[in-house]
Length: 282
Ligand code: BGC
Ligand code: CA
Image (cartoon, rainbow, N blue to C red; front, side, top):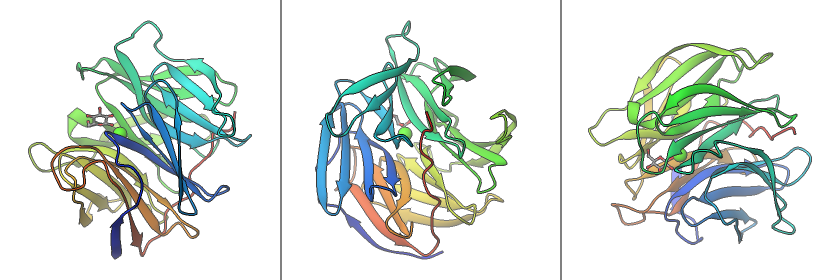
């Protein structure tokens, strides 16, 4: 499994860079800086940023145009032309200590994203599903730090991280109904302070996992065998996503912390290609 040319990109460093997502239509990479209340874009070497007035843990393209966010208080649409924000569906308005964190869409364009307590209180969060009709369903309760989520290429498996468990779990997934079941451990992160954070699945079904506290992105086969560990000059690696014209560029976000480049955005070339990010279809 070959990767090459790891470089830090010339964009401002984040406090807590998160949620990288490649929008193939726009040829743009989006990501967030959670505590800075910012959404960032890099396209054709040009960087742009939006102040959104609340933290956002995920940003995705919307099939009808613009972007959709998993933000502190719910799922929001962001019009990149004007910066206007529109609430699509509130999430946990009665729990002000919680915020939304990581998320992704399945191929039908349903947006799954979860919550966490800002103080990381155990089991205070949940995983939600926003359907294209803007209805929100709580699909998993008792989550501590809801993090990476993605699907196998045939969408029969859903990978999911609740970071303090130190595990990446896998469920059977029904792409017709969005029901999931049969939770089991996919891999356990080795190393004391290392927890899995964001993740992405490649076109061969390999699972790339950002290791918070571990300074690495690791790739596992669908059978759970470790095939690659890539070191980054930042201990707190938060997420990764494939992009670029042929989906052979792996983008990696990081947060401030130990290491020479904490908060930097990185890119490298991967021999295996990623899968296109699914837009929200509502
Ligand atoms: C959260 C952080 C958390 C980290 C490690 C991130 O997704 O936004 O608040 O510290 O995961 O668990
Ligand atoms: Ca995350």
